[in-house]
Image 1 (cartoon, rainbow, N blue to C red):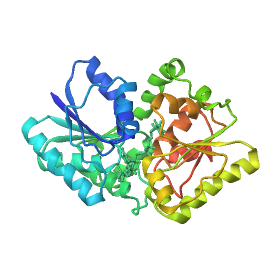
Image 2: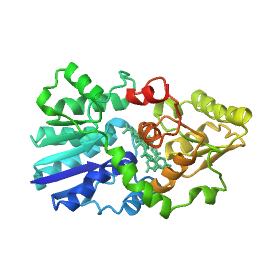
Image 3: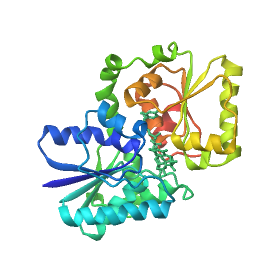
Image 4: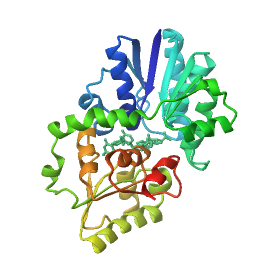
Amino acid sequence: MKIAIILGTRPEIIKMSPIIRQCEKQGINYYILHTGQHYSYEMDKIFFEQLKLPHAKYNLDVGAGKHGKQTGKMLVAIEEILIQDRPDIVLVQGDANTVLAGALAASKLQIKIGHVEAGLRSFDCTMPEETNRIITDHISDYLFTPTETSRKYLLNEGIPEEKIFVTGNTVVDAAYQNLEISKNGANILKELGLKEKEYFAATAHRAENVDGKELLGRILYGFSQIYQEFGLPTIFPAHPRTVKMIKKFGVEVPKRTRLIEPLGYLEFLQLESGARMILTDSGGVEEESCILKVPCVALRDNTERPDFLKQWS
Ligand code: UD1
Ligand code: UDP
C-alpha cells in the first residue's frame, strides 16, 4: 500500500508528525507532498528540522494568494502528481486550503481519502475553514475524528457510520512526543528573560481577527489591559499574516506586549507550558492548552472544538 501525505501549513506539519513517525517505524510505503502554502523558514522548515521529519518528495511552492488562486494552483499540481504516482490513499489533516485541494484532487481520481481531524464544526460558514472541513469530510472515505462529538456531527450530516473512526487527536501525540525533547532542547524562557507564570502567551492569526484594523486594534488593546490588570507582559509570537496587517494598518503594539517572530514547536511548547494564561484564536493552541493544563481564553466568537469550552468555561 502506498500513502501520500499531503500537507502545507504549520499545524498540518505538527499534527501529521506522529503519523509520519509511525509510517517510518512500520516501514510503510509513504511520501510527503508539501503544497508550500506555508513557506517561511519559521512557519515550515523549522518544524521538519525540530521534529526530524523526512524531506517532502514534492514541494509545490504555491505560496500565498487569494483563496481561489491558491487552492486552484494546488489542485492542478496535486492532480498531476497523483496521476503519475497513483497512491492507494491520500491523507490530509485539518481544514486549511491545502486539505481541500488534496482531497478534491484525490476524489476526482477515485483515490481513497483519509481525513485526520474530521468532523470539526464551528457552524460559522463565514470561516473559510468551515467550507474546507465540510467538503473534505463529505468526499472522504476514512474520517478520523478527535472526539465523540465530532462523530455525532458527521452522523447528523448523513455520513455513513462505517466511514468514521474516533481516534483522538494527533496533537496529543505530538505534544507528548515533544514535551520531553523540548525540556532538554530549548530554553526560551531564559532567552526571553521570563519567569514561569509571570507572563501571558498570545497568538492571533485568523482572517476574521487580524484582517480588519478595528478588531486587530482591539485585540492589542486587550493585551495592554492585561498589563494594567495583572502587571504582567504578553508574549506574542506573531504569525506573518498578523505582522503584515499590523504594518499595513499602522496599529500600535502596546509597550508591555512583546511582539516576536513565530517560535519553533519546542520553544512554543515551553512558552505555553510556563504561561499564566494563554490567549489565542488558534485551534491547535486551544487544544494544547487543554493538554498542558494552562488556562486559555479563545479570542473568538465560536470554536469548532467544544471540548475546549468544556475545559475552560
Ligand atoms: C492558514 C489556514 C488557517 C490555519 C493557518 C495556520 C486557510 C484558509 N487558512 O491561514 O486555517 O489556521 O494557516 O497557521 O488555509 N505568510 C508568510 N509566510 C508563510 C505563510 C504565510 O509570510 O510561510 C503570510 C503571507 O503574507 C500570506 C498570509 O501570511 O498572505 C496568510 O497565509 P495563508 O496561508 O493564506 O493563510 P494563514 O493565515 O496562514
Ligand atoms: N505554534 C508554534 N509556534 C508559534 C505558534 C504556534 O510552533 O509561534 C504551533 C502550536 O504549538 C500549534 C500550532 O502551531 O501546534 C498551531 O498552528 P496555528 O495557530 O498556525 O494554526 P491553527 O491551529 O489555528 O490552524
